Length: 154
Image (cartoon, rainbow, N blue to C red; front, side, top):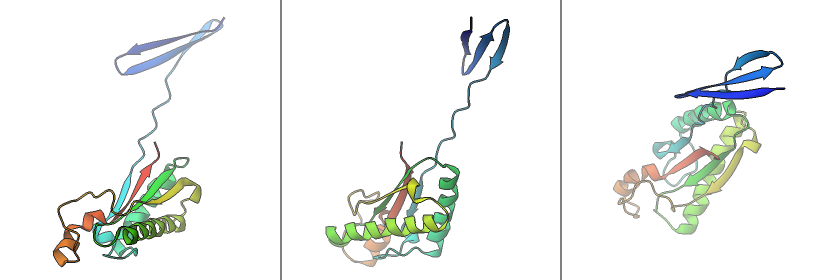
């Protein structure tokens, strides 16, 4: 007869496996490491552009390494814009930004099957109160809103 007994003390747990007359301790499998999220933002995209700056390319390369290490995990690649411009223009631009990042991830060896690409336009601002006029102050203030977020699907 086989009997298994789970012993737990505090944060540690051990499974005792009984097979026939012998009993051996088996440690539980370690929890998987948390999967990191990435944000390609601000100065990493020029205003009114889907082109990555050199710093943006470097950030995408960092994200690619992390995504490849998390093989089997799917990531959402979501483009965002600031509120300057029309809703339709911003939705299109955020989609172009997400596709730009996804293409850079593909070039870095991330399989397309690991990525879901979408666009949010100006719907999820991370910084508000900057205004939506095309002034230098508003453009600089809104930089954090011009981003692509790469998050693991949970």
